[in-house]
Image (cartoon, rainbow, N blue to C red; front, side):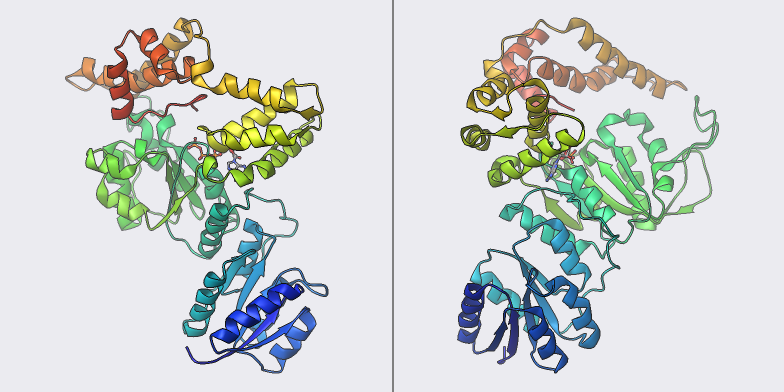
Length: 481
Ligand SMILES: Nc1ncnc2c1ncn2[C@@H]1O[C@H](COP(=O)(O)OP(=O)(O)OP(=O)(O)O)[C@@H](O)[C@H]1O
């Protein structure tokens, strides 16, 4: 990299000093200022090969300066640094044409590598869509941990694209929220966001749900029905729990993704698709591929950009912000204002959160609704968490009726899907296989995840249950969705 002139704007003198030293060491000339007006003057005078700017400066917001810089000198790259580390800042920086966004505090090594990339890159920056609608300052995702910053940066880069995204992460980590953010701030925000959960639909109905069906396509198809692909036309289709998709439907989906068109169930005319696909799963698709339950070619089609959402226990520094966010949400829904004392917060940070943000959200809701004290202390949190820990939970009466009616509902779905004729053989085994997963999941949730008690309830050997949980990839946690 040859020596360059780098313009730095930040109202924090310490940052100016650190950047000057680090960049001068690389042989660059560095000019620094504490305000946006001076930076703009330099740029307008044709000075500098690269700009590094802060967002909040006394006279102007650095982000507002970027479009003006880009208009006057499109080739000049701008790196944005900010302590306002939210998804919105990252997205705005990307939208306005920043080369890179660096959340503060940043690692100097990282800064140096971004500067090198900016000075060496000769491709024009990706064009980003227009400005976000006014008043959209409400944050879609909460969290400022390094792990979330990395997610924001990936998301910001994806906003101007239609790339297929695969979001993985444990249950309750915010996969659906991320999919929505990609839609709401992306190119297709004026189109529909349509979600379909593969685990929630009887397997036999998935293809008709996805692609729609013609009148008379199967018994019970009394009318033509539109599928989710059609509903999402021009927008985004979110395929949730993609790991639960039956193989037949996978084959059909793969064909649609390859060919860009599909036919409805029972239909003959091809329909062109114009949807952006985002898929999500909490299951390990590579394991499913090895077990022959997921098509490898479909996996590669969907996994163009993988995003892994970290479990909450890997970003406990976000817990106070999330708690405040959910308490505020409660207030807006009419629940009383509350706060949490330090010892209680520390305890929340030490808990493992098997149900991730969803579990935390539910806990905060309970705190707001059920406790009269204004400041929640450690005793309340201990009691709540003890309740959530399977081992500390007394056995509940087996929920005979609830369980059997849930299984019955599942069976009814199964038979309804086969109204026009049952699979000709092996029905007993097939039906048992169909109900095994919900039966075990429901038993585990009835015993709050306690496998010993679930085994007793089911009348199964503990090891057999454990093997089934593993084979069927059942999540063991409280409050299975
Ligand atoms: N970063 C976050 N900021 C604010 N709320 C969040 C965040 N992550 C998750 N949530 C909230 O937690 C709940 C669960 O999130 P979501 O449904 O997106 O998770 P998921 O990973 O899709 O779960 P599952 O795999 O069980 O479907 C939602 O109510 C969501 O609003």
